[in-house]
Image (cartoon, rainbow, N blue to C red):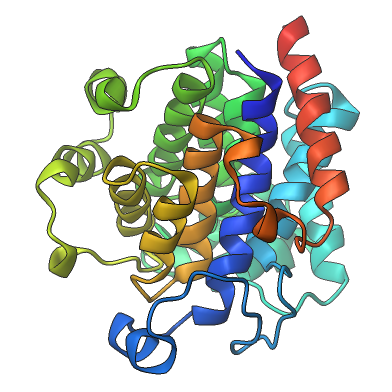
Length: 302
């Protein structure tokens, strides 16, 4: 278990977010027409970002990571209060489900009640990737304890997204991150994961990855689509750069697909495998690196 893979995971997530954010909501055809193939931190997009600037995906991941570091582990109440404090700061982008739940917590509702109420209001359609984009610190924290990893991944997702499919997308990503940090070979990752993923929709999506053609991929805001696209990009390429370029050029929810793939690839390849030209412009890189190192120290003790 290498500290560099912890750093690679969290920095990789932020890099993927920043690389994909300017393309968010664009189709792959429009990306091709406007840019050809995006390989650099271009900035811009509907949020008018600077190169290396990220979105709510990384901002909420940082809330989760700071909570783990300051509490010495996963504390749902502390984490959700950090999310609320973040929302108080009027961020430039907030997911619909995340805002609906946290707005109730702002007004004094317990997070369990607020999240379940949002699930009911939306007719059970809360299987978006808003939990998936931020959950990687849990996978690092519990790198040696699968039961705790699954438990806390599900709870972390339910802080805003109550849907079991969304929760199991988070647990699956974190199981993969933990396995990769421990050195599981890429060729063995899916076979290692299959018996551990209890939710049938998520497991079926993983099982389909080896046979997917480019035309059948969707990097949408649905947690399962996003997870599937990220796994496809990681498993069908050979380097961190190739994986991230492949996934952000799919179009659709490119910041979150980039973040999820970046967490996977960063856990597998490590920090030094992230291109320096991407790392060097990343906003807040020093804090992300420090948080990853502190979570590594906590994981070593537990």
